[in-house]
Length: 393
Image 1: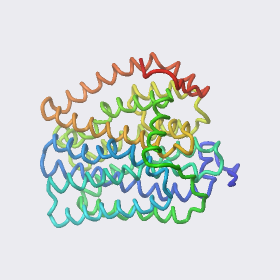
Image 2: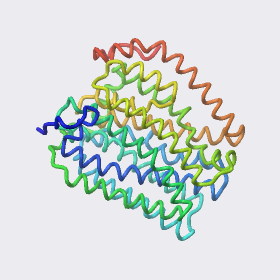
Image 3: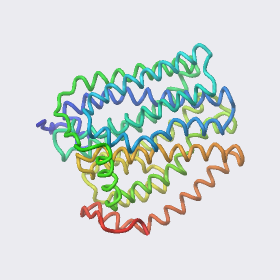
Image 4: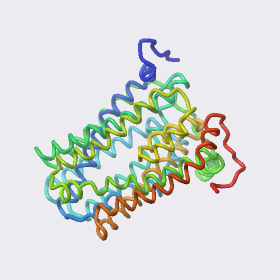
């Protein structure tokens, strides 16, 4: 078992584990490339069509497979060699990025192909996200360091969200969307190299048929009250507040009169706030006190990472792939629905009034969540799942 070094500060203690360091380094490059592609694709869609509705449709197509495929993918993942399949999925994601780059560079890209490539990306991400997250536990030698590993992983995501969009804006101003897509394709190689350097015992595989494994994971989510509550909260946040990202090209070009660099700066500013939130989480040693953080996080629309870390550390290892898949299907599936609604409503009311309406809906849900915060805190601290209770009343 790897012993963490006392020379590292508590907020970085998971990096004392060799396997996690390799994963962390590869993940850093891979996620940065993904953000560059996401911003570049959004700009490409709006540059070619000028349609806020198509922005919503594209985002919907990229994310909705995770709502439909995600839960089944989690059941499948828990029965497989996760490390081997994660490497395979990275190869397919790289292929998707390179094909998108070629289509854009040759001028063959159009609305239909953009939607098809977005759907392909969504299906691959339905497997990629739970594979990545469910493996983190096996890369950390001490269970006490798992919450810190999850927080550092979340911090990495939001640091890339802070750095990637402005970098994408700079690259778009100097080069083209095609080069940005190619850079993303190359970025997946870094994670593959990191995974190949890792030496760890594979997590135990689930036994039974796909149907049995899926039902077991669904039963855990249904009968564990904190998990149920956090997933509902996540769904509301992503259905409303997180959909703002779909409208950023509209704000950047039409409202602020800017260009791709403007889009990158705006998107990066959102990532800066999320990054600061995960810095706070990295210093936390347990679940105590995080219930209040979840409620406040909902109010300021920076909740997803906190919920993600809680769900992963609460779930038994044998169920982790399935629980993470329910999280990711909610996270990205409701992002898809929210993005589609935001794009369509913005085409009718305009971007400003769309965001105002979403803010009012979210504010109403936060009021409801405030009435549940004490029960949520007690369940997180004491491990009370209230498994026999009915759904939220």
